[in-house]
Image 1 (cartoon, protein in one colour):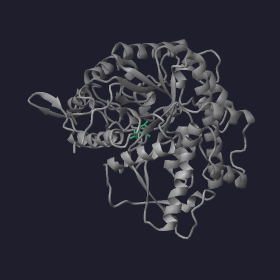
Image 2: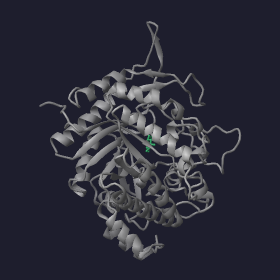
Image 3: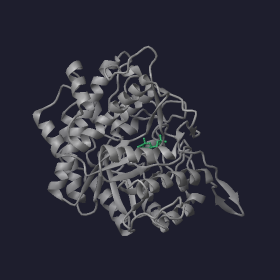
Image 4: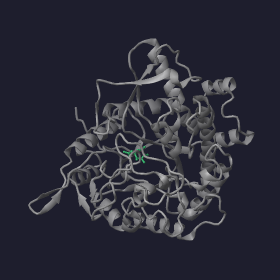
Length: 492
Ligand code: BGP
C-alpha cells in the first residue's frame, strides 16, 4: 500500500507567515502601534511581557521581524523557486488604520499591500490573507478596552470594507480571526492564558480577576469577534461573490487521559468549550450547551437581535486550520466536569507522544484524526491547512565553502504530517484544498518572540536580539519541499 498520494490539480501548496512576525517596519509609513508591538522578547520558559505602550530600551522582536517589509520581493522569489502556488500572510490593521477608529485609511499602508499582492500574483502565487492575526491596533485596547467593546465590531467592519474594495480583484481567499478559539479556556490564569486572550482580543486582566470574570469577558469578546467575522462574510459577497472567507482555528485533537467516564466527560466539556467558535462560524448559531450555560450564568449578555441574524447569514465558505500538537484531557480531582467551572477540566501528559524542543507534541496521526472529526462536524466544508511545522533551533554550518543547514528532523516532521493529510484526502475523502506550512522562512516566534525557534525552509541570519546579516540561506528542506510540490504530493 503506497503511503503517499498525488493531490488534485488545483491543490494549494505553499507557506504562511503573519505581518507582525515578519514585516518589521513597525512604525514606518504611517503604521500605528499594534498589540504585537508591545510584546517584549521571551523564551521557552520565560514569558513575553505585555508593556503599557512601547517602552524605550526594551527588546521588542516584532519591531524588526525579518525586515520582510523591505525584502518581500527577494523572499517571494525564493517561494516561487520552491514552486509555491499560494502564500498566506496578514494585513496589519495598523498600516491601514493606525489607531483603528479613523474613517480615512492610510494610503501608504494600502499601497504596500497592493505592491505585495501584485508581487505574489506576478510569481504565480495565490494570496491567502488574514485580516486579524494577533496585531489589532493598541489604541483600540487603551481607548476602548479591546474586543469586549461592541464598538470594535463597527471599526473592524469599516477596515474590512476598505480592504475588500481595494483588493477585490487580487485576493480570493480571506481569513478573518487567526486561531480565534485560543482564548477559550481562561480557567487557569497563567501567562499562557493571559497571552492568548491578549493576542486574540486585546484583553488584559488585573491579578485579582476571578475565573468567572475572565470567562465572561472571553465569551463577550468571542461573540463580538464572531459577529464581526459574519459581517465580513456578508460584505465580501456584496463586493465580489468570488471571494471566499474562512474561519481559522487551532485544532489540536484532544485525547482522554483514561477511558474513565469522568475523563470522557471532561474531554467532551473541553471540546465544547473550544469548538463553539467553529460551530458558530460554520453553522451560524450557538450550540445548545452554550445557550444553557449563558442562561445559568448570564455570561456574554451584550448582544442584539441583529447579531443573530448576521451570524446566520455570515457563515464561512471554508475552514482554515493550524495544526501543531495534540492535548490530553482529564477530570480535575474531586470535581465534576462542567462548563460552568472550567477548572473542573485539566490536561495530562501523554506517554505515547514525543515532544519538540519547545515541548509541543509531535502527532501526525492526530492531524488525520482531526481532519476526519472536522468533516464529521461540518460535512464537506472545504478545509485549508494554513499552519503546520516544527520549531527547532537549526544550526548554520559551513561545508566546502558553502553555508548549509541540515534539517532532516524538519523533513521527517513535515513528511509525516503531509502523509497524514494525503491519507485523509485519498482514503477518508476529506475535502482538504491546500497545505501551507507555517513559517516557510524563519520569522519571529509568536509565543516566545525568539528567532531561534525556526520553522523555515529558508534560514534567516538574525538572532533573538535582531542582530545578524539578515541574509537568507536554503536549508536541506528547501529542495525537499520543492520536490513535494513538483510531484503534487507524490514524492515525499
Ligand atoms: C500559531 C500562530 C502563528 C505562529 C504559530 C507558531 O499560534 O497562529 O502566528 O506563531 O502558532 O507558534 P510559535 O511562533 O509560538 O512557535
